[in-house]
Image 1 (cartoon, rainbow, N blue to C red):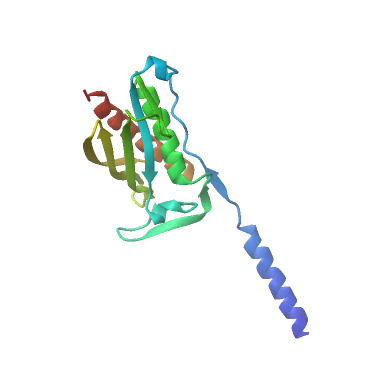
Image 2: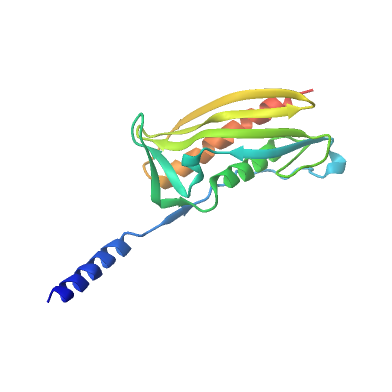
Length: 188
């Protein structure tokens, strides 16, 4: 009799645990961009987005949500479809490419006369008050001159849910890309 109770209990636990395994996967949307002249022969300015780094708590698969001033939750069913640092780098290259006419922007080295951009993202998460946070700093090596800028973008979600949170995070990242592009476009 005990054996049947153990088997029935194990089956019940298995059924309960597999029922709540609805996973959702998120990819940052690419901003719509106008296709411009992007061959190296037509452009004399080169920008290599060398690295976009994220801290360990953002580097996992789960989308991060801040539940209090000091506590963060890493979702187990709401996951990034590909590594977050790759998504951030790819969308940054796409955004900068569309916002910097006359520049070739790439995620790989372009030559010896290129500017190099590194971004350290320290915050990329939703928050308990309905806001999303995109923060960190970027470092640009422009012809041997180093330019370093912190950034902090907070946007209010219009609706609840992970879909809206990811869309707002993408909007905040695009906003920061526009800020970086504006700064780069003023360089001599």
